[in-house]
Length: 287
Image (cartoon, rainbow, N blue to C red):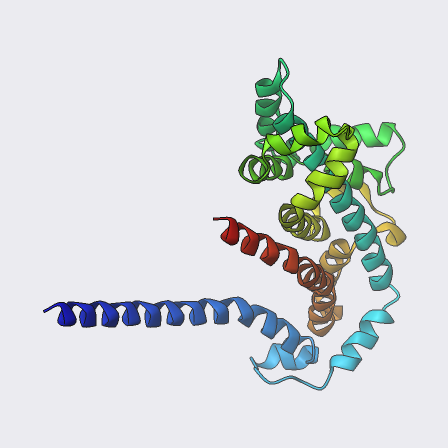
């Protein structure tokens, strides 16, 4: 009787495992298919894309790249450089200062600690569009239009990144570590930079990926600030090409530009994913 029960349990486990694998394969296929179609269409001509759907690469990839790079009305290279500058500075500053703010809330006890935490979370609920008009008027009065400063400095205050860092610290960083560092004579900035930051690599990597993708794909704020061709970021150029005259609209160029736009995001993910995996593995060993 026990053997029969064990056999039925094993067969049930196998069935659940098979169903899980099937679901994972379907989800993987659903996630990969749009990227595959993007790459396929970037190798096809505009006429071929309009004519029919295809899973086979075309022969116009080099032509599409040449057309994009030689397009005098669309500064694709300058747009990528501008997006890289804005996204990189935004990520570095927002992740660092959000982690520092979370450390202050986590490691210190002060009178308005709970009020400060709730205030930061309240800011997170306010949509960016609500203050858009006032934001534009302010940067215009300050003479900051057509610069990257309004895209970088406000992004440093990232409530969502702060909240993630705060929750990670509560689960992974004990206050005894900070107290031990203080007893050994370590200053607060040295403790944060030399002890806390290395312990937070998985959290920093996750937020760096999310922050880079968010800043890289940001269209709303740059569209309010940047109008000169030499200052525009990549999403603005993609939107410009998409809204061009239908008689001059080239879907091959559009797909090629989108393929260009996702390449840095993939590189950032591949570079930082090892820290995420290391953090998950370390957490599993500790558990």
